[in-house]
Amino acid sequence: MSTITDLKDQVDTKTLNFVLLSIATAGIYPILWLYNNFRVIDNVTGAQTANNNFIIWIAVCMGLSGAFSGNGDETLDVIGGILSIAGGILYIVWAFRARKALQEYALNEHKIDLRMNGFYTFGFNVYYINYCINDLPEAHRKQQILSSHQDVKKS
Image (cartoon, rainbow, N blue to C red; front, side):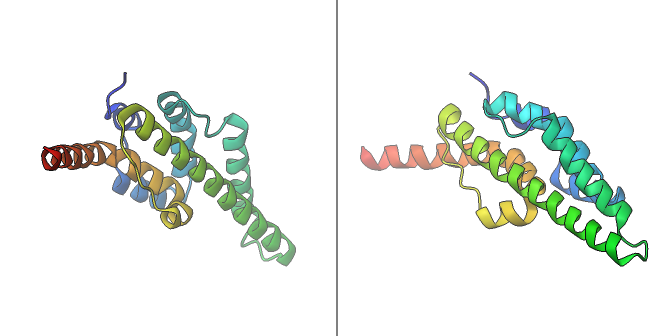
């Protein structure tokens, strides 16, 4: 059986660093993070959240949206905007897949009812998933305190 810190230790990215690196790289870092870590998340949770082609399509959409936008050509700006929306949708789809995988993993492996906010998953997608991965040990600690408190009340 795995420990609750396995996923956090393998991903090993602080959320603040993740946000700052995303700003510094103009949005490229989330794609790199996702490419490097989706396999880790899949292996630890036992669920498939993505594959190489899915991540490549996110990179294609986001890369071409940046290349087409701001050229002064209205048609290319529209195409760039559509590709940016498509890339954002792909990020959201992955985030909800990862959310489900994390919740199932926490429940089945560690008996934790991991409650993840759907609004935050939608709005902050990869950042929120990273935050929740980092917060798993704390959620486990809280669950243990609550369950031991209920055991005392039953006695």
